[in-house]
Length: 593
Image 1 (tube, one colour):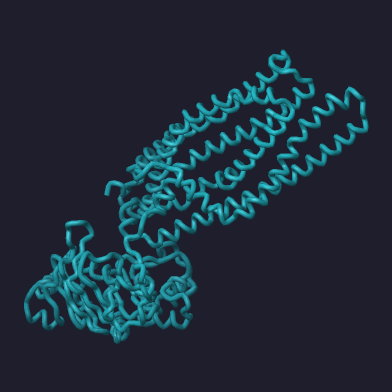
Image 2 (spheres, rainbow, N blue to C red; image 1 turned 45 degrees about the vertical axis):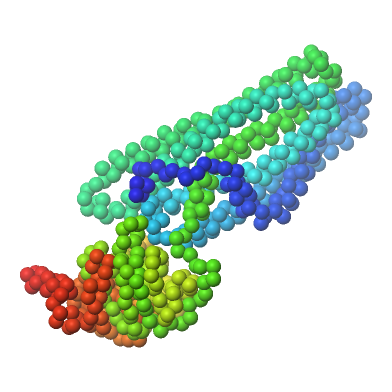
């Protein structure tokens, strides 16, 4: 798909709407008790901040003219106490809202990571992994300021505005109305820039996603890059992607920083207007103390208004990231448990494909009404040309995809009626593309059975002939391996993956090119262990090296989505059909080699 490229911008399926913020507030709801406690402290701080201008008015209009020194000391003491209380409130507020904000971010990360675990292979196949990673890390981190400060500070600032207006109206009603005369200008200004800012940050999130995807791809393919001396070319591509990000960032920041000076200028203009009207006595008649106190309240009014403007600024900025996050969370897994799904009981391993038809894309069938019956404990080899549908068979059996029509039964139970977890827990899958996690070898093998003892792990390793090379390593089973097992050979990685799959003691074992990276000598040793392991287990084996599947109970030759031949190696060789010709062609190649 076109979107599966680092240099293609992602498009949103729908525009932003208020529902996104309703969903965001649902993450805040569990912490409402802490929020209300914090708001109570903030309210006390707001009352305290109102006392300064009020004390100033009293001192200028009453205390100084009357030379009331006792009252001056009393007011001073009260003012100092209010400052101490406000300082404590500020400290509590900062600590509390930071904890709440980070808890909300943690919950969002948990949700998106858990959701990603359930998404189908097609989701990851259709977009670079770097573009997925950035949503879990960068985009959620970008909401940190909004959640750690913005939401509660918004309520705090709104309370501050309300309390300030109450004090202002109590001092002088007319002067308060004049102070609000420029608010409509601010409203129009905000409306003008909000759409431009949101679009600018959408473009920025696209370019940031593209750059992250290319960095991830470049690091993952560094061996290929160095092998083909592509460093200079890659740097040119990165420079282009990076410049696109820089350009988008500068445009977004330019629009974002229009907000603060706009609000600040309106605030200054309002202050100048009040000074002019108060001094000239135009429409109002106030004392000097009242005018000075009023200017203090105007600052108390406009400072939170500026903060609200900054919050709105952050809100518009965060909108682009919220859209991406919720877009990911809204992707419905293709494969889900049915509403009435039940736990699959312990199975024997009887497998039936009954007229199964399937295609990855509409109108392009990979399997065409394929049917077969596998008895418990049988080992089945799947062979055929590339793209014939061999891997598709085991993908459908593991229910990584759902069939278009027909039925797949295990012990006479349709696999679509049972829970995915209970189905896959009774299957061991060893894929061609092995994956080793960072950590110890012991931890990697235990991944197949989390409660496995060290003795069980060693036993499984011995069966697949991994034990000998593991004990020769510096720290044996406690040897630390790097990400993707880069310090191990391809054969060693596959042997560890084999032990991991076998440790789960599966009733159905799936091997997809599991021995492709193992040398002939190791494969001979492994085959001996497999012969013992496969007893009593139903197994499906895909291998292009036909010498590895000669001992299978039956061999299925699949081509063009159909089961053309079925039988033992000797039976199929005697029939001299498609399998015979495939085997002979491989034998001739080995002879010429």
